[in-house]
Length: 346
Image 1: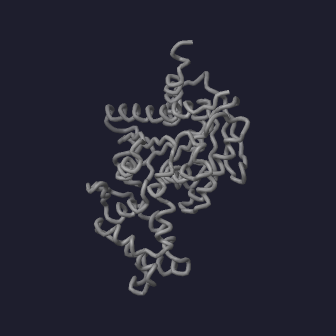
Image 2: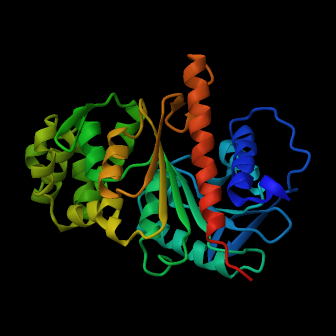
């Protein structure tokens, strides 16, 4: 009895254990649930299901563009850590693992939520937890009418809110949010991913020519109009020109921007939103957290500085490390606590 039975207190205790496991701190958990990992197919979506043994709330864990996808050691460690905190965790196979942006992935996430909601081992409304681009896909899925009322909470870490904002930052080194400029130093990998994404901004028949121009292997002056508009947008260096240049994209490019920008569907997200971001994130600009705060005013946001994108960096100022561990603990606790608030009764 007492405080240990209060859901919020339980959630904070569980989140401390999840954080210790997730950040690879050697903390004994003798009373944690024993976890089983199974390869499953849920409504046609393949992935790994982690179960704690008893009925429990479910979380769909969505990695970013990690080449190993659901088998990435960090993903496996975190999925196990969450499952040991009495959660059913599903990690779906997504094309995003190959840095591909496909609408079929959004559908896979939606179908995963619906299938989990019907599993006998699951109680309450599922939650979505996404990292990097996976968090952005989680927000997109949460706005889908098929699951809008079924998702308890969406938690993102190091994710973007507006795809055009990411393009602005990656090409010019500046995010402009609310009229204020936020400088950003990008990791070369961010630009490589966006260059690949750029090819989808024009018709398939125009993509070889656009690829050659982006690589400097062909003059851009010979590009057809749609491909030239995409080229100008992605090679632009003036942040004030980003949005005017985007207006010149053909229908393929404009549709892609809207389809993969959570900002375009913000009005359809009814779940509680939690978002964390590293101030010096080199792969997704910190300005995207500011855009999310403006677009989803009720979202609860957390800023950290000891993470390299989504990976915890143990070296550095101890006070900063402690502050960030506490902030991440609060973020994790909010996820567990908010989900438990929505548990079905009876």
